[in-house]
Image 1 (tube, rainbow, N blue to C red):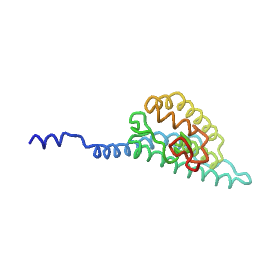
Image 2: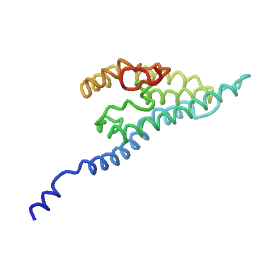
Image 3: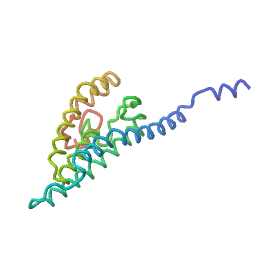
Image 4: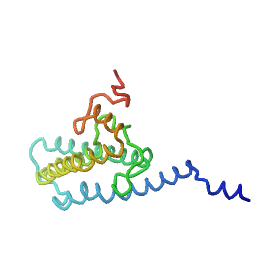
Length: 191
């Protein structure tokens, strides 16, 4: 009886990781709807009501570029949120941070692809609807993201993952993507 009880009391790391993944997916989905959903969806709608404001020659090309930016932004946003949940075993929300530093996928090109994706969604809407106000909003969001990353996120990651994050920062830029993916070993995967 004691051996059976001891077996039940012993933690199962595989099962714990499975539950952590499920909780991370649920938490990430909730945060995706709350944060980027508000910043890149609800706020631009409040600003411009998602109505087309321009009609100059060549505007169709500008709209197509805006639509493309929105598609790319959405794909990158979903990819980064999935990586946080499945690989990092956490969420982008500070209340349930990742257990592991995520440095795969789009993170091999730029340190902040999630913010990059949100900005692409907002800027895409500015172009799609020809709304300068949404473009100004995109600039303000970029300034806010830059300061949040500089003042909170980077210091927190330096404390949480000191060696790993220093190596990551040494090889992957904050905002301007690399042309080749970082291989995680201090070099390029195409070198």
